[in-house]
Length: 500
Ligand SMILES: Cc1cc2nc3c(=O)[nH]c(=O)nc-3n(C[C@H](O)[C@H](O)[C@H](O)COP(=O)(O)OP(=O)(O)OC[C@H]3O[C@@H](n4cnc5c(N)ncnc54)[C@H](O)[C@@H]3O)c2cc1C
Image (cartoon, rainbow, N blue to C red; front, top):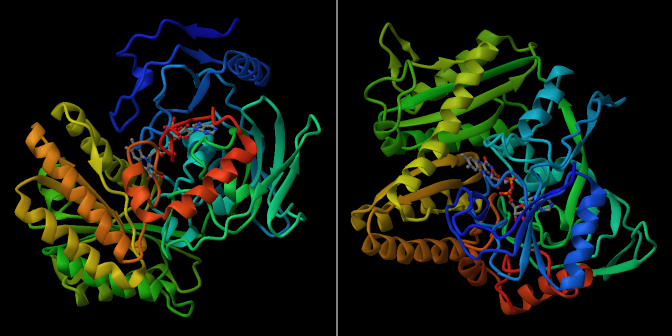
């Protein structure tokens, strides 16, 4: 079968918009390589024609990272690329490894791991995202509180550079000079990539290239600007013996926040029985306006989603009792039939666990649908702040957005001080006001030592805020990294850095 090519490209093509709903330029053609050889052929041709190339996975991105912003370009979609998942290889440590090609979806990866009693810990919410796109964004999810983003679980990457050369990059392979990473492509070319040493925010963070670490850490989270990811090897953990997803409800957001702060502290204490791998917050506006979860109390104004992981040594009852005590201490809504327990939703089997996951996934999905219906692009923050700023950042969102009269929602990864604030607009005036407020939020978050992107990346939409976050000097250092592997700046131009 020959490679599918779309040319000319219709201006309203679905491939020119990701989940952020922002559109930029119409490329010369869209291509769908179905092998490494075809992909290389596209890159060689692009080089001959001096065209830019954009790389697209499942286009679930929220920052238009995969959306062409130059007309003299080719958009490469991974839609037809082979989705190959290797066998789960158990290690003597009790953990395991798995290989997957870039077009494998996170759901396929997760299913392959779970079928062998293992789990891929990061758990980004959008399981239709591809491995390549998720690595490019260093995606993370509900369990990042305990396990961090994809980067921490990536052992090896196979990458194709913009000139078609390929290389395997392994964790821990760095034995080059202090100032540079050195690597040799399979064709024998040596590349020298400057090492970055700028200070990153002390919180969950996905804005710009990774400072410090290994060469592999630089490629993960580079948003398709350094190389095209073809394959990856990940580490897997064994499934825990005791796994208890729970949802608890509060009749005020403040009570939920106080509960979260104490729960977080206790989960981090190695000696404490409480061990949740996720601490997710859902605010009042969402609970009131979005489809209800069966069993949710009518008076609920905030919900916290937890997932206790442990062994059976302490006993399931003791674990539940300890959680219940902490929940009631912070005013969780009590069970009407037994006020000595909170009205807790528990997932004790996989059907119920899937229902919880669907409920959680439904929130950003519903938000995205509402945005699409509004006719205005998505304005959603992805900011995180250091631990000490938890209260400040929640106050900031309310102080700025409540008086604005705009419709806004917040939810997300409270354990990481990482809330997604979504502002819904219905007119140009509202959109302009929301953009102004968005900028003010970012400025305040940066002043708190935080980041303007904790998991979705910068893409194209967040460049103005990225530019507020890092000085010209730091961004020039990052651009020097890009120049080392993409001297003509043809790979994903306009992502991370505005066009030169
Ligand atoms: C409902 C919903 C929930 C979401 N929840 C989360 C969440 O919990 N956590 C999270 O982190 N994100 C989340 N996202 C955002 C999105 O799923 C992630 O950003 C994901 O990493 C994008 O993967 P993708 O395959 O769709 O990539 P795309 O959107 O196609 O591209 C994203 C970026 O990756 C680059 N890219 C794609 N493929 C490759 C490749 N093979 N090699 C190099 N670069 C490549 C693109 O150029 C672009 O810069 C959510 C999105 C939605 C719609």
